[in-house]
Length: 456
Ligand SMILES: Cc1cc2nc3c(=O)[nH]c(=O)nc-3n(C[C@H](O)[C@H](O)[C@H](O)COP(=O)(O)OP(=O)(O)OC[C@H]3O[C@@H](n4cnc5c(N)ncnc54)[C@H](O)[C@@H]3O)c2cc1C
Image (cartoon, rainbow, N blue to C red; front, side):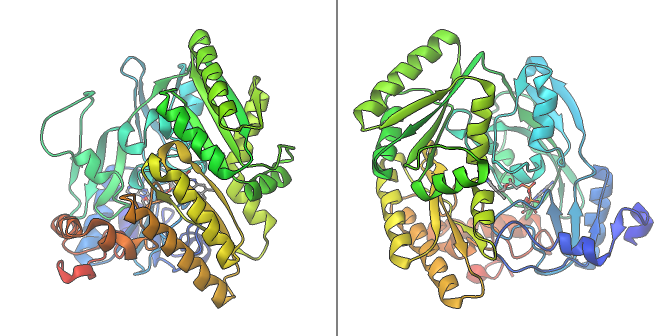
């Protein structure tokens, strides 16, 4: 029946294609979908979802599969909807600083086009993810400290709901006091409430001047204290990333750089010439006072690109540096005042458990990761990695932080939902049940229907 709807070419049960949609970039076990479909319009998505709903078949939306907690793995089989053919930039509203895109557009594709207009899209998760996937995971990244996360950029979504109906969650207005905040609800829903078929997103003018720097410190603690002071001083930093010693070593080896192997902050400043000079000088004073051993500025585009490439390729640096091992990435976020303690606690836990891993993160947001390289055949090591993840999450939750700052829940962080949300989890379950009573939309992710037993 799906072939009748979309033709043979865009409906596939091919084994290789199903295998490509059976995994994400995480360590979670793979599972094949029964079928992969490639719609070209909201009407087709709606028809697929409606048919699937009638047959009680699960539907899993798929962007690029770069998520890290098993989000797109179809553990109940069913249909994977791959959005790669819905990849058109529909409208650039220069004077409104808005764009309208299909969900399969990637962030680099959008930025390439926006550059022609002197604009850019700010959310930068490293991986060249799709905007649909980024909205569905409420992605963020290196620039969120200045420009905010995905939820802050979404003005409007076109969503196909589980019954096949199509709604819009917002408008073009910069603000609104009308109705419940559906943008906020659908962003971060990880494909469990509906499929996004169009997004209206906020964009920004390319700053007049950009400067990047590397600041190295004697200890991770010193580096984190420096970040806290930079933020407390109100310097409008555009990026501030922590990279610890083991990560610097991997970065140098992978990217061919020769940066000092010390706990390092990668910094970026955006602004006009005069403002930038002031921000940089103030920042230099602060970090020097806090023990910075060396601060080096990358003034030309080439040096700046090399710096951010080294940072963005860090996960791949660890992967290539440890063949045969799988990457497991922790992802907690804590209030900024708790950040130094949380990072110290994390390092001690990695060392105590004897695991291989580096600490890195978007520390300006209080969000950091441990990139762990695990031998999945070694049960003891896998157990230790799980123990580490749990220790880090509980530390963050004890301080009113969150179990995931940006990667999302998928299946990996589901076990912490009750602990983090308490009675609010039942509210989320009720919303899921109301919007998807048949539990066909990415079932088993984020909100487990069986959890708390309230929705079945
Ligand atoms: C090396 C590396 C670095 C990363 N760094 C970051 C980082 O700094 N910050 C960060 O936030 N993430 C990071 N990630 C994780 C990942 O890139 C993000 O989660 C990203 O947003 C996923 O986008 P995607 O297009 O790959 O989506 P997918 O992985 O395909 O899907 C993610 C989720 O979105 C849903 N989905 C996809 N498309 C739609 C749609 N059209 N409608 C409804 N639901 C949909 C899926 O069902 C799934 O639940 C990183 C990943 C890697 C591999």
